[in-house]
Image 1 (cartoon, rainbow, N blue to C red):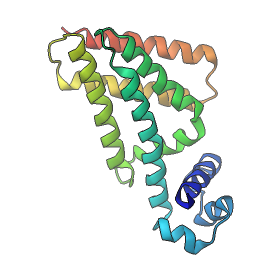
Image 2: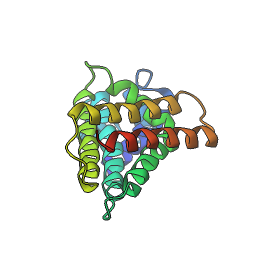
Image 3: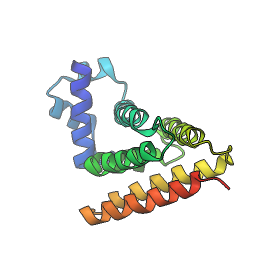
Length: 184
């Protein structure tokens, strides 16, 4: 319960101030806890950031796993997954902007978490292709699709994306995924 309260407080502060400008003291104030309590659960600001990343991406991956594989082999599951991925990023834009900024740096404590996150999304795409009966595709096809999805989400995070922007981004991404998973 206390740990979750710290995570929620950290999410709010990271979203509001960014990672670099956030101090442990800011999280303490937001969570209304003593320094000792924070350090009982986390060793540093970076440690709580990693826990926030795991929580946010874990929630997203759980929803993607449920949405992404259609029983009939159609693309409806993949469509739902793309919609969910982009909506999740837009709805939590301030926090995801911080998480993505930090995770793409190779020296970041989040770099390994990001690799695992991307690997899970790759598996979802592979399963979708297999469900459609598509012959195995080159691994870089999946990497390109995941990178494109991540890039579209980043583009939406750059500014205040309108409803029209989000719809256009989803349409473009779905066309790319459908084309990519169609096979040679």
